[in-house]
Image (cartoon, rainbow, N blue to C red; front, side):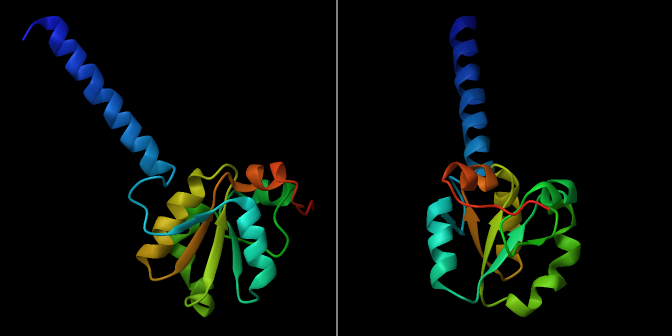
Amino acid sequence: MTKKQMFNTLYWIAFLAVAIYFGYVKGWILSDFESLSPQQAYELLQKESNLTILDVRTPQEFKEEHIQGAILIPLQELNENLSQLQNVKGDKIIVYCHSGTRSVAASRILIKNGFSPVNVTGGISGWKNAGLKVVHD
């Protein structure tokens, strides 16, 4: 194998690794939870009454704007605060963040601990882009 062929092979391996990592982080691959568009999540909220809305952003982000009725448990504090969700363990939990990456990580934590998360793709940014309302404190 020539140096050029080796470089090309290593390039494609690195490219594939980055693509797989990105797909995993975004929840496009190897996810065992449901993901919905903001509009689908909104419609689900209108149909079902026993849903919890979980915001996994920072307290500052939550204070600036959030989906009405959401509770805040920042992603970095989720593992230590799962007890706050014990009373809704059998119900669906709609999870969102700013753009959809932290909510994927949160959904993975929740599914591992026996919860039923539904990830909002695009996060609150996608929610607002779909014309859906947010609360400003």
